[in-house]
Structure formats: C-alpha cells, structure tokens
Image (cartoon, rainbow, N blue to C red; front, side, top):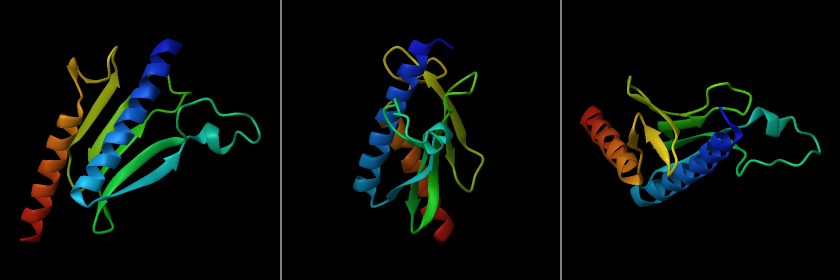
Length: 129
C-alpha cells in the first residue's frame, strides 16, 4: 500500500476511536485502550509520527469487553481495521477510503457503528433475561 493510504488509514482510525468514545459516553459503556503500537512501545527516544499510539481499543459493559476494534501496525503489508463483537462470531474488516473507512465499497459511518452497538446491547439484554 502507498504511504498516502497509510496516512489516510491512521487518520480514519483516529476518527473511529473518537466515535467509539462518544458512543461509550452516550450508552454508559467504558472506552478502554487495549494495546499500543509495538513501534511506539519500543521507539525509545525517537519521535512518534502517527496521530495516535492506540492500536486497539474496546467498549466495555459491566467490566467486560463488548466490542473490540484494532488497526494494523505500520509493518503490515495489507493494512486495515478490524471490528469484533465479543461472545459471538460477528466481525468486520474495514479499509481506508478517500473520505473515510470503507466496509467493502460501503462507507463505514458513525451511524453504522451505532447500529452494530445497538444490536450488541440487545444481545446483552436477551442473554441476561
């Protein structure tokens, strides 16, 4: 992938993290950083040039992960964002587009994230009933 696509991917990743934080606040979930980029951890005193150090993050309900998102590290050949609902087999693979993350050819929007989280919360309610 071209370096320009990498820049777009990491900027779009940062936007997704912002959506996750906003959704967590609205829904009473907790946003938690799961992992930093390996090259950030081992960079020593070198400056870090990505817009964030967060490589994966989760939205948690009652102390348990509900939704996990991660982005490929810089050294990966084919980079993308992965989304996963915990406790099930649902997962999504996103890649950088010209205007934002894409789910295949469809734009991945904050509304799409909200729809996924709505389903996850309904599933939690069903399981606990």
